Image 1 (cartoon, rainbow, N blue to C red):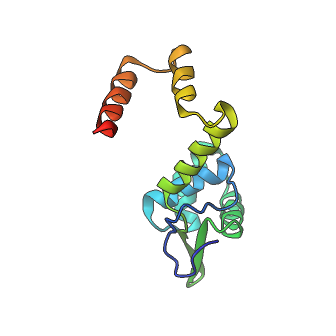
Image 2 (cartoon, one colour):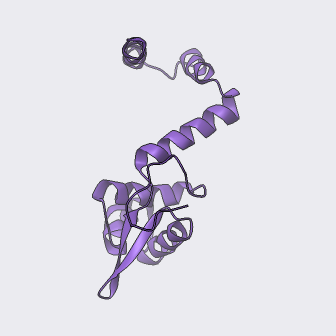
Length: 135
């Protein structure tokens, strides 16, 4: 599934589903472009009460799922995303709409509006997006 050239894939193919904890690690790697385990830990360990060993376990799982690539750099490893953030978000969004709203994005927006989960600013932004898409 992942490309062997070490560059993120942007062909819409997603890796095996990743957990919420793995997603937190991915966010660090996406933000930085590349990261070591220590750099990921610096960004998330204190907030989540994780150890470096926890981060290394999550990184190993992400490598197995082909979400990230790894290369040695002396005694450490450098991790690089194999999927683009936009592709991952797109896939997860589609799965959410399919699973909870029968594949209809309008049903999701209606649900959010009906449950008052959307602010006036959110509604204005959605209107602007829809106007732009109709052009």
